[in-house]
Amino acid sequence: MSFSMYIITILFLITKVLLTKQCCDSVVWNQNGTTIVDIQLLHWQKTITLPQIAIDSHLSLYIADGNQVRLIKTFQPLTLPFKFDEHSYPSTVFIDRHDNLYIADSGRNPRILKYSLTTSENLTVIAGGNGRGNRTDQISQCFGLFVTDNDYLYLADYDNHRIMKWPTSGKAKKGEIVLQQGDQFSPVDLFVDKNNMLYVVDQNQDQVQLFTEYDSTEGTTLAGGQGRGSNYDQLRVPRSLLVVMNDNCTTLYVLDTGNDRILKWSSLSWGKGAAGTVVVGGNGRGNQSNQFNSPGGIVRDPQGN
Picture 1: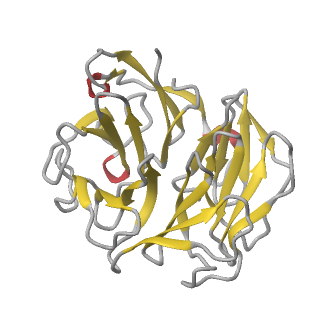
Picture 2: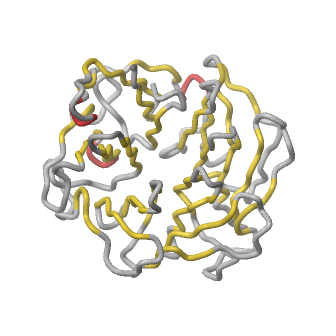
């Protein structure tokens, strides 16, 4: 079985070179990535920071650059059949198992849009769209989306320090608050497992935590939480996560943006104070094949590669 990871700085493809039968934590990665999309060659604005990506079942790449969502297909930029106005700010994207594209518009009127890539249906607002605020029919800036197999959308509502849940049908007038924390809580990415456990990147507190849905108590720290820094038990402005589950263990990959690296922790050893293992990066900021420059997103392709 092959297993690939896509990271965007430019856009790198990192491939696995070893997998044992014991645990996914035994994966060893090539230290030199392959550039498959160079953002500068697409003539994007130089002000773009931390672009986010998603991959559909045909391995086409969708990139939220803060100005519009672009489709990269066979390494050529294509324009989707819709555009955003000057008041919009596409901040992240997600593609579910049905090839529905979800776009977080964190502009003047924050909302989550849904678009079918298979039927090319019109955009549908499925969350927010009622002005910026903290009511349950409103959202603020959103940098993380996740859709479960039973078609519920979870979103990281950054400015409101909460995680919300909405049905993807678009028929709900209001969302549910499934996690609300204090003002220091700054969720920027999340993953929801089949038991509705929430893995959340808390950027301001430089940690990844595990929460039970609807439980307002403090979460369990899986990675970081040791203050901002560059030690292996620390993170510096983490931006994204990838959770890989198998029968033997769960592996957590964290995009440690401020340190220009990806770290991993195994469920066999994670926890506050536990040191992560550098997967790729950590060689200083730059444009070499073993370096990152403020990477923004990390995803796994839909074929399990």
